[in-house]
Length: 199
Image (cartoon, rainbow, N blue to C red; front, side):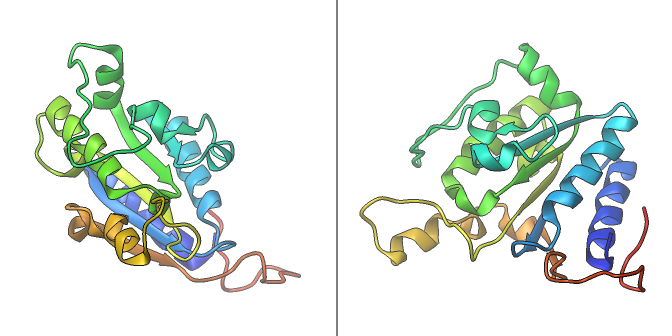
């Protein structure tokens, strides 16, 4: 891991160890090692018998996560969410039990999802977990790159797309935003150097 990845890795694990939940957003362009970070955290926590939900906003991205699924399939998000969209989990269902027992949710390609879709998810989680913090107080790691893909809103202008992005979501100000700046694809590594750490 490089220093940016390791810093994010430790912050998330420390939040897990405290058992207080937390909301993180990992911002990095293509090649900065977001998927490597997701997979390392998922493997670490699952090796300790914790439940980790690995989801992504696209089917292709979900294939890069161990046991990954699309966020739409896991959380029953409507394809065209609006202000009235809502999904109620039965508190006695197996899905609700799974969410309560989940230690970490990793959500890749978060910027391409409409902010209203996150509302559909975090409101039921607040109800299931009896906790009014974002996503029911669970530990959630969102990530992606705002320069790649924003929510698709058909026949609308940029002025309509920007308000639909995640940074306009009600919980955004509570996100701990971390940046991955070292492009691992472009960096030629002939031998170990001081920018790399072993976990």
